[in-house]
Length: 385
Image 1 (cartoon, rainbow, N blue to C red):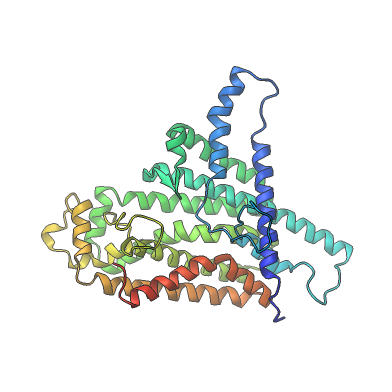
Image 2 (cartoon, rainbow, N blue to C red):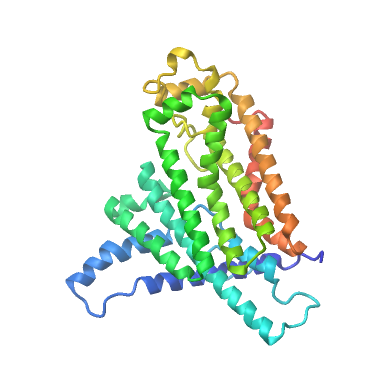
């Protein structure tokens, strides 16, 4: 089938379904006590308010702009890889020339859609819980233009809200195969976060400063695959678990999501050096040894400046910003990000059941993919840095 018409409408419909399901999930989670009391007031302030703020905050996924003619005030919608998997393996609504499914097949499709809908909500809630916890660990006061949860409600309540959301999301997923998938993803994320945080410690910094380039890059790839790669992998793996996708295709998709995660993390690291990209303050993370650009340039650091207790913060920032190979390194890594994204897209298209499915996936990640390409083009023109 070559016709891709109407795909954006399906994406929008699926995204609206997810938003409705998320609202229903939140309403069920925040059931107030039957009577007004001191306890009810404390519960509202200490649990319901931070949980509502956490679920209502942004998670870094760019929304689809409202379609032409959409009702005024309609919230923008975010596409989901969970629903892409459902559309790829179970088909699109009202496909031209297709007959209505038999009753038994229709029942199976309805059950699969219900499982996918629960998985989509669970993934979104887990991402929001991760935001709350990451901001505490990173000391971030602002998240996507809003005060971080721990700034608004304090660290203890933000920790509690994030932890509660993890357990609630896993319970909501219900399907055992989906819960197992999500638990693996949560574990991967926590593992990557632990190692990433360790780059702020003297011992890990000393190991990185002493390691050869190949080992530093392998370290970065391991952390990026566990952290950023999991953000791409988690929704897709949960969906294919719900749908019982064959193992060979699951491995293909897993590898593709790893590549997308590495491309995304390269983009994040590079935009620290290129004004106008990433939505962050330029040079904001120049003092962190988790940044790939810094790890690439350490071989030329003067031996006398390699003491992990000294070669940090402002000194590390001064070293990398003044490095003669900075621009060529940025360009090379930007090209690597483009190739990783291309490879991932090609792998996914290899398992797409139709051109409409391929278009759905393109819509789902097109903003980040476009920015990866645009960053490379910007550096080719000699801008930024």
